[in-house]
Image (cartoon, rainbow, N blue to C red; front, top):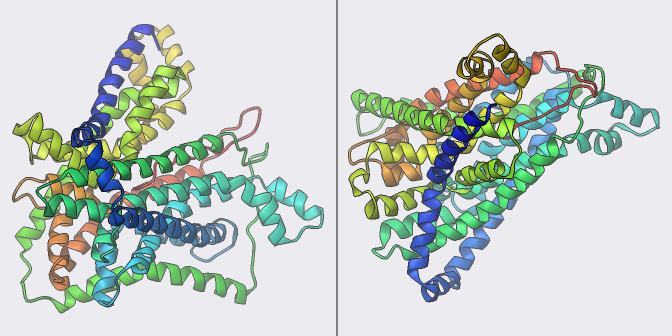
Amino acid sequence: MNPRASRALLALSGVTALFAVTPLAYLCVRVIEVGPAQIAEVLVRQRTVETVLTSVELVVVVMVACVAIGVPISYALSRIKLPFAPIWVVLFSLPLAIPSYVAAYAWLAEFPAMSGFWAAALVLTLVSTPYVVIPTTIAFRSSDPALEEVSRSLGRGPLRTFWSATMPQTWPVTAAGALLVGLYVLSDFGAVALFRVDAFTRVIYTSYRGSFDRSTAAVLAVVLVVLALVLVLGERRIRGRVARWRTSSGSARSSLPIVFKPIGTIGVLLGLFIVVGLSIGVPIFSLVSRLLEGSRRPLDLAELLNASVNSVWIAGLGALIAVLCALPIGLLAARSTSRSVRGLEMVSYSGHALPGVVVGLSLVYFTLRVVPGIYQTIITLAIAYAILFLPKSIGATRTSVAAVPPVLEQTARTLGRSPLRAWAGTTLRLSAPGIAAGGLLVWLTAMKELPATLMLRPTGFDTLATELWSRTEIASYGAAAPYALALIVIAAVPAWLLTWASEKSLRRPADVDHQGPQLQIESTVVR
């Protein structure tokens, strides 16, 4: 990359970083305006302490549960010979298309007495398990079989071999997935609100909506960001170790599948079926049942279609903004290791630590004070989506560009092409599918975003998420069912495409260098 292009990208990256950090910076300014005395008064309240403890407990419980469930499932999908194995992989990816508030609504519709901490923990575990299952399955498939063979040759049994030889190769990936689960739970609003759990997101939202003094909401939002930042730093530290773990041998081969006796295979299938039934079976059954039962309020097809179109295009606009903002930072991060580039990338990842309710609150303050002309407009909502999910697009862009050898661009330059044509014909062309996948991931996630949408949407602008929420809040489950099903069906398309792309990449021959193939997993999963 020539110096002139590097300077241009660095300038654009600075603009992107400023764009990404604006909500957090403005929120901090808002808290400073509150004053130390009021900040201290909010922090020492008994309710604040209880909110912190409840949020942390929920995060820990769901993380542990997802690892306890996800690791055995990943091992079964990757190492055990099962009938219809590809279908099982898709089934365990489908919860990515079900927002937590849709799953919570479905369980409440079937079991109205459900409420409280453990109900929220159950639902959040079921929708978050894919964040552990998908990367851990890839890690198991790519792990080095020679280490297991050596362990067995030394007389160790299967269980001891798993803990001493197999699991050490995959635990960084599993830990990164678990930390992302924690980040998802900490930022969740729908499930904790429906189950009446006083976690941070619900308390912040109620403080914002129910009080003329929104200082409390701002202070609590900063505390939530600090907790989320701890998880983000932990995830980045674990992810940094993944690239140094060698998880395959010098020869491109994988472990032979384990063949159980029929009774053992049936037992494994039964366990998989139970988890699939709870995670996607119950929600789908509940939604279809409510739809067939109907409701006192007749379905307005025009209203449903309008909400669907609004969801698709506003999420698409947010994804487009995120991809355009991610390009300069992703290109620089893939080709440079300078401190300035790492710093800009880290700042741009601030959205990773900002729950939707915090970004919504920040943009409300910012637009009212600085640019009131765009308060509660489409552009503000699209910007919120781009800020929230920019890290997903940056990660996909960086990984895709890093996989393209720089020598291709250099060769194109020697053939007389201009720097721009050489870059477009080599790096951009080869990395475009990965960049598009990042945009697809942002689009999928933005369609499910609820708290920021509730805070920032223009009056009269309804999406599937907001229509579902307005009906669920008043326990109108039959009327909410069509919107929930439409959201799942639409979100299932990009979720399936992402799963298909991952499966296709696994079937490609490994690129072997002098050290043998290595596994590199980018943790840009759905939030």
